[in-house]
Length: 131
Image (cartoon, rainbow, N blue to C red; front, side, top):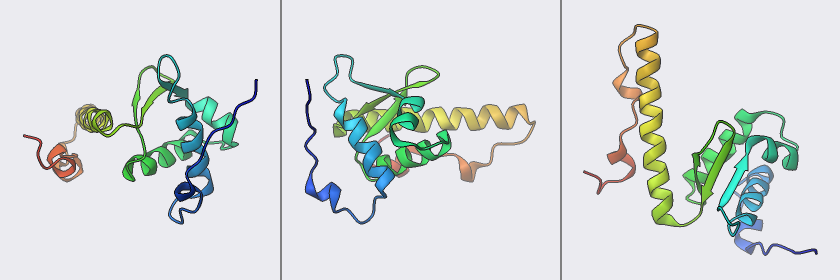
């Protein structure tokens, strides 16, 4: 059975997003109604888009998150869970900020260096109402 995915004209004519960013978004969005939600691996995105490097996929997903189009959380070593509704996106973004800060602290401790406070992400910078 063949099906099609509706794509908003605003996405097609968006001059800020690259073609790869649009394609990754469309692929992710097409899984939004899956039984366990949108769960996609980096490998799947690389296969579907032809992008060779996982870091490129990460940069694309970071930009899509920056523009408020999606948010992701890593649920296993290779699989990401994507969400598209604003409240859940905020929860995922908070989770990711906390996770990145913990990794920075662990890496600084491992390298026996003090944590550079300017590189620690502050939740209140992203969510002014957060206490």
